[in-house]
Image (cartoon, rainbow, N blue to C red; front, top):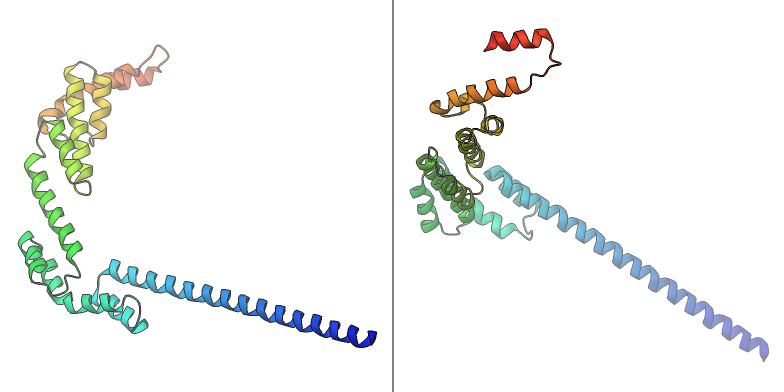
Length: 224
């Protein structure tokens, strides 16, 4: 009888072990599948974002070829149908053309792109109207309003105006540094180029010391 009990206990243990192993195998399988699905979704999203970034008909068609029933397929198909109308707006490249696209497009797939393009054109026109301004606050407001456009030119203009302020305060060292940040002599307004020359002469003179070589002193005299 004891042998029978022992056999039954061993059988139960074996069955339990097999069930446990099978359950663990199933869990591992599910986890692996989830990883595979997540990776496929990541790759598809990457392909979609790449196609949108390229913004070409070929790129959109390539996505549809790879993922005809993909997560972003509807959006991409809309972009393909919208593409000719959007291309015409880009080719014309006027505020009116982009507004016309926004108003008449069926899917408005490139609406955000159109808004960005309109903002860019507006910022260029605005910069042309204030690029000679002597009002630093006005230029800073421009940079705040259009943080993605003409920023380099606006910053250089501010450096030039700061340079003029330092020059008028007889701080030629800081004036020279600001003028250089603005791009140097020939990047300045013509009226400020003579100021740059004065600042450069003072800068070079200020760098002379009692330990300067004879050649360096003679070089300064020849230059000025």
